[in-house]
Length: 304
Ligand code: NAP
Image (cartoon, rainbow, N blue to C red; front, side, top):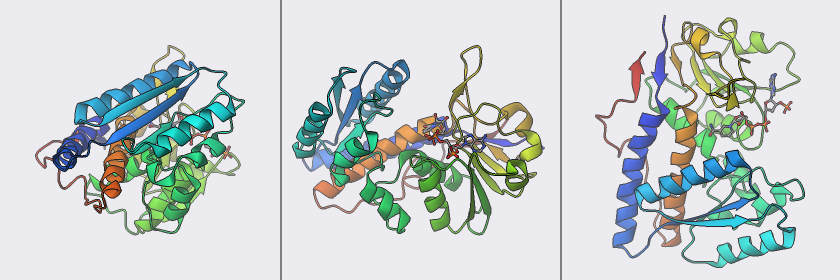
C-alpha cells in the first residue's frame, strides 16, 4: 500500500481563499484586520518564518506590522512594545516570534499579550480555554493538524491517536483538540519506555519531537494516518520532518510531507485566528467552518 499525501500547501491555499473573502467582508464594514509580528534578535530561521507570515498577510489583505528589535532588547522595552500593541485598535493579533533570546522569559512575554489578541493561541488563558473544551484562539500548529484531519475521509471520532511530543506549543494543545474530537489520545515523550509499541497502536500518529527519522516503518499500523509536525535539517541542509517519509508511506494510509505539510497550515491558521480576532473586535461571532466555505473543487489529497 502506498499512502495518499495530505497536501498542506494545497489545503492552506483553499483556506487562504476563504480568509480573503472574510477580510473583504470586514473591510466592507470599515475594519482591516491587522497582525503585529514581533521579532527580537537576528536568528535566521525566525527571520524566514516572520517573512513568510508577513507575505501571507499581504496576500489575503491582512495589514501586517513588523516590529523588529535588537537581540539585546531589555525585558522592559519588549513589555512596553507589547503594551503599545495591546492598546492599538488597528492591531487585532499579536505574535511574538519564538524562541526569544535567552535573557527574555517567553512565558512572561506571551502572557503579557492581551489574550484576545493572542493569535498564536499560546497565552495561558487561551491554553486554559482549550483545555476546558471552549477554545477561542487555538494554537496554530495543532489547529492546522485538525484541519488536515478534517480534510480527509478518515473518522477521528473513536480512533486511537498517538502524539510524540508534549510541548506547550504543539503536543499538549494537540491532545486537547483530538480529545475534543472524541479520539482516544495517548501522549509520548522522551521518557516513554517503548515508543514503537505505543505508536503501532495508532490509527492517527502525530509526530512532533524535532528528531529526524525518529518514526520508521516498523512503528506504523498499516493504513494509519501519519502527520509530521517536525522541522529538522538533513546533514545536507534540506528541510525534513520526524518521519522517514520514503519508508513510512509504504505502510501508512495517509501521510503529510515536510516541507508542504503542517508548515503552510500553521501559517494559514494564524491568519484564521487574526481574522476571527478582528471579527470579535466588532462584536461579530466568527462563523466557520473554514474548509466548507472554500473552493470544494480544489484537490487536497492526491495519490502519490
Ligand atoms: P519541543 O518543545 O522541543 O518538544 C519536543 C517534544 O518531543 C518533547 O515533549 C520531548 O519530550 C519529545 N521528544 C523528543 N525526543 C523524543 C524521543 N526520542 N521520543 C519521544 N519523544 C521525544 O518542540 P516543539 O516546539 O513541540 O516542536 C516539535 C517539532 O515540531 C520541532 O521540530 C519544531 O521545529 C516543529 N514545529 C513545527 C511547526 C510547523 O509549523 N511545521 C510548528 C511548531 C513546531 P520531553 O518533554 O520528555 O523532553
